[in-house]
Each structure stands twice: as structure tokens, then as C-alpha cells.
Image: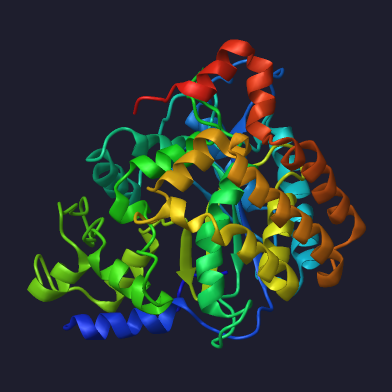
Length: 435
């Protein structure tokens, strides 16, 4: 799924003009027809399980990535600031098509990396190595400077985290289980369930953190204006437009030299004052790419809250479950009823800065209400997958995950904690990381 198609260079002179642009850009309604996935991976040398990973020389990563860029892939290949590898699929007409295309690309990528003595690891955070930025570009210099104002969590988020991001159409304009308003609400309540069920980052920089999804903790601890969702009350387009206008400007770009990183300048204030220069349509486009809420509307909905998953094909399980719960009307209605009761635990703060999302990241499915909601949602997804054309192998993978984790009140992070032993498990139940 591509960036919003904004190309006009014109100067933006009024807040109303900006709000109208945002409303037109970010929710493109119609029948849910396409699905996409963006996979981030941590790259390291193969090591025995439980053995610390060693830092990789940047030139070694560079050589591997140069080789990868010569490989014909259907997915877009990009590199994150800490050297994480990201593959972003094209929009696919079906879940099966999306899974098949990404599997083929991952096979090609793994072959090249193996020749360079490297492997992909599906973990929400790098469990061993401290954050270290390998990309030196004005965007990341500015992002680092901006995030540092809220503490060190931002650097770990940039350099030591990885996710599975599911991209789905915004939905119909009309109300109902597939309407864009319902899907917007569902994404933020179901999001907490997805955090809990797929939590897979209990370690960071060599120690257990006390959270099953440390990746989600990192997002919660950076600037709320950059990582938070809009308030839950307003209509989606209105809520998002206001949020974008009131969000902090990460940077003012320049043709040469370091980019300016203003402090406490919102896009609304930038439009009003025109200082340090009047913002343009291009600046608005760029501003939208610097906001990282759990659900980001980009014409479609980009669900960003899921930790990277273990195993070669672990990523397809959250992709399949989420697609089934959004695109099958019966499953969507069941999921909405299951998660609606969680709403009172999230008020009045938006995700991920409220108690519901914090409990999802720390406790995962040991939380009884989250476990109950997850059980209902995964059961509904299993029933729906054949109806949306999922192949038997995908259905089996979801069924196995449901049996192994959801029905037992567990998540992938619990496997890591079991390997670490009782002391780490106690830590995960009662101690929190300092950042």
C-alpha cells in the first residue's frame, strides 16, 4: 500500500484547507477488497537459542543489502534506522495471494542473507544488542533529535524493534460491520487484543523488561503526540484531521544542511504563523509519515501494533486473523461484540497510553478479560477463514496458534520467559523496564 498520493507543492494558508486535504487523503471508502502486510525483521548472525547476538559491522549489513537490492522482489524492500529489514507487500486481492507473494519474497531474501552468514529473526525487540543507528540520513537525524526529548525509549524504538503491520481497506461509507466508522473503532479495541495475543518482546538489550511486549512499551513512552491515536469520540475523518493538525511537527526540511527540529510546534501553529516558513502540501504529506499511531489511516487502515512473530511463517497468523475479523461480516460483528466491553478500560485516554493497552503489553493473555476477548476473536477468525478463501495450511497455522497460546492464556513471549527461567518470569509479572 503506497504513501498518500499528495503531489501539489502549493502553500497551505488555512487550517480549513489542511483539514479538507486530510479528510480526503486518509479514508478512501468502498468495498473491502485488498489486503497487504509489512514485515520488519531483525537481522543477525545465526546463534544457538538463548545465546547473545553480537553487533554486526555496518559494512557487513551494507554488503548484504546491496546484494538484496539486485534480487527481483514483488515487495518493496527498505532498511530501518537500526538495520532492521522491512518488506512491504503490494495490495493483494485475497489473503491467499498476499501470503503466497510474501512467502516467495522471503525465500529469496533468506537465500541471499544465508550466503552472507546472516538470518532473519521475528522478534518484537532485539533481545541482546543495544540500540545502534546504522542509517545516517537527515530524516533519521531529525527523528532521533525529536524523540530524545521524551527520553531514551525513542532510540530503542527506532533501532531495536520490529513488527507485523496489517493493511486493510477503510471499508464502506455506510454504517454496518464493514463500514469505515465501525472498522475504525474495532481497530483500536481489537488492537489491544492483538498486542496481547501476539506479544513477543519480553527482552531488550540483554535483559527481561517486565513486559511481554516491550515493543509496545517503547511506543507508549515516546511523545504521545507522535505515537498516540486520536481521541475516541469523534467521527474518524474529523478525529484524524484534528489529530494531525495538533500533532508536533518533527522537522522542517531543508535542501541542504541539517533539518530544523522545532520544539512544541504543531502543524496547526505552523499554518497559522508561517514560521519558520509557510508549510506546503509536500510538508503536510511528510508530516503524515512522521506520525506513528497504533492505527494509521493512509487511504487504507495500517494496523501497527503487532510484534514481529517467531518462525519463518509466524507472521501469516496475525495477518490471517486480522483479515478475517475485518473482512468477513459475521466475524467482524462477533469481534466487535467481544471487544466492545473492553472500551471502559481504555477511557478517557487514547491508545496506546491507556490502562487497557498497558495491561495488554505487560500482562498479555494472563489478563482474564483480554484472554476471553481473544478466545472469542480467534474462534470467530477460524470460522471465517474458509469463507474468505484461506487455504488449509493457513487455517491449520491459526488453529495451532489458538490451541498453543490463546486457549491457554499464553503468548509467544511466554516461551521466551520459560527459557529464561523462573526469575525472568517473576520479572515479567511485576517489574518494569526503566527508560
